Length: 167
Image (cartoon, rainbow, N blue to C red; front, side, top):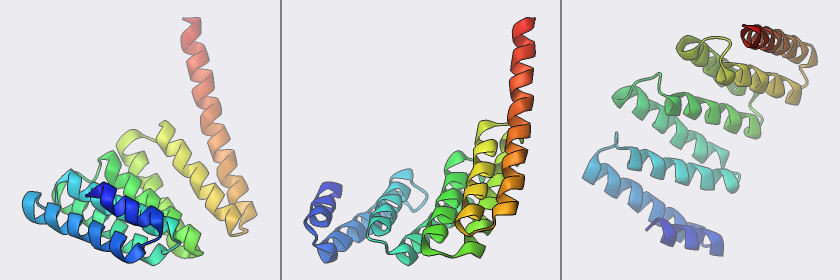
């Protein structure tokens, strides 16, 4: 049924596309439970289609539902939970909602730092994403400070890996 919904989407029949995806989501929820990853994937697929259509509010509602599902049934430290927060930051940014975009960027940084440490690649990338968000909303001095922080972390990692090579 995913293909049927996608065919409707590609042909521009948005009403039938939505019906198909909503039917898939409800069927998976009933048959396998809302915590099932296939159900979550179906929600993500619909959210991504809404994003393509620039229906950001619809996509945000679905990603909030995904976050709630992960929180309710899965470990909040899993990568998918954090990535859903990152996607929410992206969507709020696309929508032009600086405060919510920044709030979710900060949550992502906090979660990566908690689960993998400040020097992990994902943590560094999330700081860079926050700097990108700040730049898009013309908060250049704050963005520069974050970029300096990233450079400092990167240089420490680079020196450490160089030192390891010496021994």
